[in-house]
Image (cartoon, rainbow, N blue to C red; front, side, top):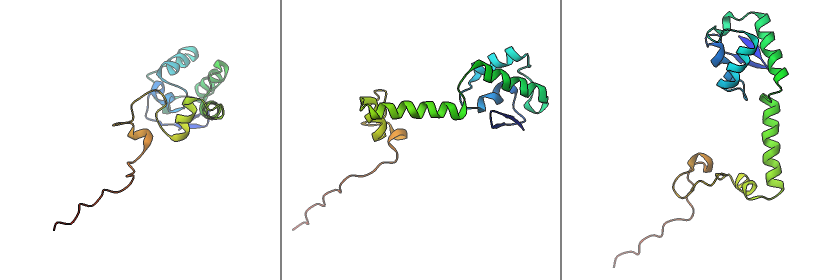
Length: 128
């Protein structure tokens, strides 16, 4: 397996797709990297030479794109800043609700988690 920025890239994938396994690199950034380094996008990861892998990694560092740990730290610090300034978006992050204006009355289960029943149903009065 090729290792770029500490991430193992699957051998059987095309290089263009394999690079997207690194957090912070999408398809367009992957294509840009490959064109700058001159690596064929249709090549399989297992067919890359050590020089090509080193070249890709060097080019990625020289572009200055935040990836993996650096990107995760930046995102968490941005969220922490929103929470500390007590902004509306920060309060939504803190309470685990959608932050971009979506409705929560029917959907948002991904963000809110499993349904939690609040209170119980009142039992019907016994018949006389």
